[in-house]
Length: 300
Figure (cartoon, rainbow, N blue to C red):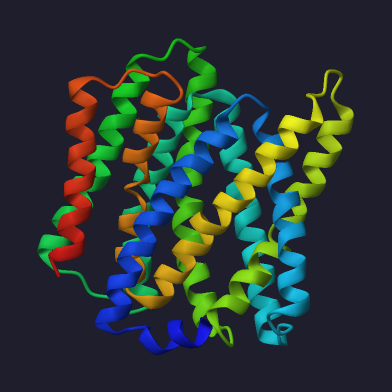
């Protein structure tokens, strides 16, 4: 499959599949965020997800893909640092604010920064129409977050801290999207990078989660937690792995913008699964997000 990805990268066929994969990644990422914000401590949930990612990745790196060369090792070290920062900011944000407030703030910050970074790093160009779509998408996401914020009843100080972490999380989203897109292009083949990426970038939180679990006075029953971790790891392969492949096949900025339609899916998850209200105003904002993504995709 790596050979096929290499053969279609930068072609119209590659652009088509990048769009499909980015949208699938968006659905998966919204599910992933809801899973981390669910019933368990977010640090613990992310820890068990990463533990499963390590276990699932070991057979791939031992028997399927080649060992990394020194250049790829250096790139992977950078990915470890950046993704550790992202995971910390997300856990800290989820500790203090609701999923429907945190998630849109994170995802709304990322697209504009990512497109700007991709313009510099990868010399990508965007039309005025596409910039209009990016603005519409990001403003609609922030409007959704602001509307959700009006209904929050948490301690105001905790909420402000949560929002600050969420904004920093959005910066890390743009940083890791750009960095990983560069890294996967430098790797011998895309699937080699994806497999090693999941292995080495998941060890840190697997260890943190293990330590946190054993220090808890009232630790949760391991069975449901382990099952949640396995589900989360499988979703992560689709979500994070998908966006890596999408940025390899086509423009980084376009893949990043399409991926942020995850906010629409997150709102639907909050509505149908978490029992949160949506209403006509949120539906309009969700339509603005979707329309912005469509304009970016077809306005080039």
